[in-house]
Structure formats: structure tokens, C-alpha cells
Image (cartoon, rainbow, N blue to C red; front, side, top):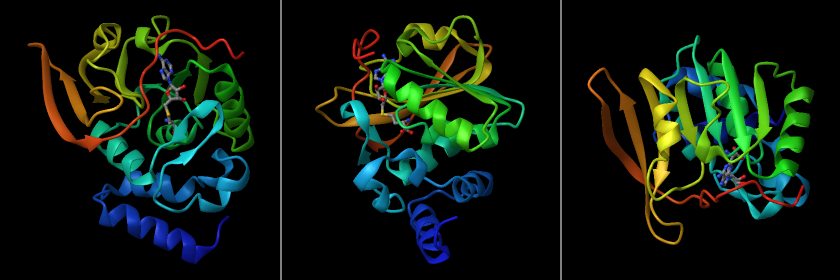
Length: 213
Ligand code: SAH
């Protein structure tokens, strides 16, 4: 457990940036961010900052994790797919709110390290795979909720088709070197509804599985 004062400041920063959902705040209170950050930067785990992780990727800013999770409006019975495991932190937050979480990353090293942290924390309802998440996870589909944590120019078609009716997908769209927008897509009986949430900055969604093995 971390210092109580640090955690209070962490939760205060989340609230002041618009993370108000109590289930999301509780999950973020319970899951420490430090185990997901290796080395030097672990000291800065409770600052509301994105930080570097292995493979040239980043762990997202906690308030952005909170806002995206809140926008997903997860029910305890939901099955959730996350594209972009990275450190595994976002998936761990999801695992406290959903019944089942699948998370995929194109870097097998990140998947391996995230699995180790899930095991250490006893998070048994989250499964990580190495895969190109643009294609979703056909074997586990369809999903109640899908969260993409890397930016694509448009919502990938396979992900839209793996979203259940009544399902919600949250993702950043736009070019990697320009302003991106976080959007929410809902699948209804009639089709897809889109709304735009806010400007964000994410690493790009890259094609194919990385060869760094
Ligand atoms: N959610 C993460 C942060 C993700 S950073 C966390 O909580 O730490 C974005 C991640 O998306 C990177 O790890 C990157 O490797 C991954 N990524 C990029 N393109 C991808 C693709 N096509 N399929 C799967 N993962 C991808």
C-alpha cells in the first residue's frame, strides 16, 4: 500500500479532472499504479502524467484512464476487450469493474510483463494475448464494451463488428502527430451512434504484431 497522503492527492487530481464515477474511483483507489511501471519512473506513479514503459510505449495519464473507463459505463456482468495492453494498468482497472477482460498488445514483451503483474495482484479475470488488436479477438467476440488505447484514423471495422447491440466502444481517432479526439460509439438496433468526448494524445495503432518477440 502506498502512502495515504500520496493516494489522497492522486484521487483528488482524478476528481478535479472530471473522474466522478464512484465505482471507477474505487477501482483506481484499490489498484496501485506503481507495479505497472518499471524502474526509475515508478517513483512518479501517482502523478497525473503519462510515463514511458518498455518498447517505446507509454502508460496513459491516470485521469485519462479514469475518463475513458467512466465513458465505457461498464456493468459488472460485461465482457470487455481492451486493445493496447501496454503496462496492463488500464486492464487491471477494467478487471475490477467487469466480469471478464481480454486485452491484446502487438508487443509480446508487454503482454508477458503485464501477465506477471496480473498474477502477482491476483487478477484472475483478465487474459492478455499478443495480437494485432485492429482485428479484435474473433474467438472471444462479441463484446459488451471495447476500449482502444492507441489512436487509429478511423474506428477499425472488425472492432465495430465485434461490438454487441447495446455495446459501447471508446477510442481515440486521428493522426498520431495531430490532435486526436476521444470518441464513443454505441451500437443500437438501428446502427451506430457516435459522440465526441475530448481531445487526447495517444501513441498510434500500428499494423501487425511486433517482431521484437
Ligand atoms: N492501456 C495501456 C497504455 C497503452 S499505450 C496502459 O494502461 O498502460 C498503447 C499500446 O497499444 C502500446 O503498448 C502499443 O504496443 C499498443 N498497440 C499499438 N498498435 C496496436 C495493435 N494494432 N494491436 C495491439 N496493440 C497495439
